[in-house]
Image (cartoon, rainbow, N blue to C red):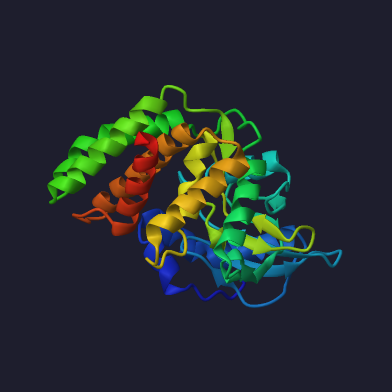
Amino acid sequence: MFPIEVPDVLRTSHDNENGRAWIAALPTLTAELLDRWSLRPDGPTRNGMASLVLPVVRVDGTPAVLRLQPVTAENRDTVRGLLTWRGDGIVHLLDHDPVSGSMLLERLDATRPLSVVDDDAEAVAVVAELLARLTAVPAPAGTRHLADVGAAMLAEVPEAEAGLVDPADRDLLRYCAAALAEVLPEPGDRLLHWDLHYDNVLAGDREPWLAIDPEPLAGDPAFDLLPALDNRWDGSDARHTTLRRFDQLTETMGLDRDRAAHWTLGRVLQNVLWDVEDGEPVVDPVQRTIATVVAEHRLG
């Protein structure tokens, strides 16, 4: 077996029956994949909230990474998405194991995420250009669809409303739900990343910046804006920053601003629903600011 030290954050993220079984099997699985793909370990493991990443070298000397993660509803379409994008603006998928969900990926520079770029306008421009490329691609058949995700969100609103203590927060929840309901009949068919924030963009050799960690979804490209709006939030001049980012993203991606406002309010709704599900009784101030700025544009 391959010796693996599992970080506490992974044990916490996978603290359920399936997750504990996956963690227990990691040493054996890693050893099997190293042997199957003729890989040599090339440094210490890294991890995110839900995955373990092992730098490796292929038999021809090419550096790569072995990403180990259990198959979940969020990542079930990752391989399908990466195969569809074929490395255009995003990390290359070199091989994968459909049973375990493990992937062999092009190695990028994990020490240089886009968040190291101090100029926020420059960083947003990188995200916007990557999103424009990624969302230009039609989603392949079988990809989870925004129509279904959005319908499920609207069905959760009454219960979530009861979990919010402030009447103003309940008003915001209903407002965002109404905005989503207006555009949901035309949900789109593009291939979305769904989580493109600065730390999901890494420096690369074949391109300066490449996206990683997609959670593919079929839908309207405007549903992909929010991670770049609430990323690296420090509260200074928040309203101006939000509007500038929104303008950059919609202009570069060629989006209708009104529809983009609707879909962004729908994404705020999603975040609020997740927070309420986690026991939060109030709307996060960042989400409220984004919703307020976008709603003012919508009304304007």
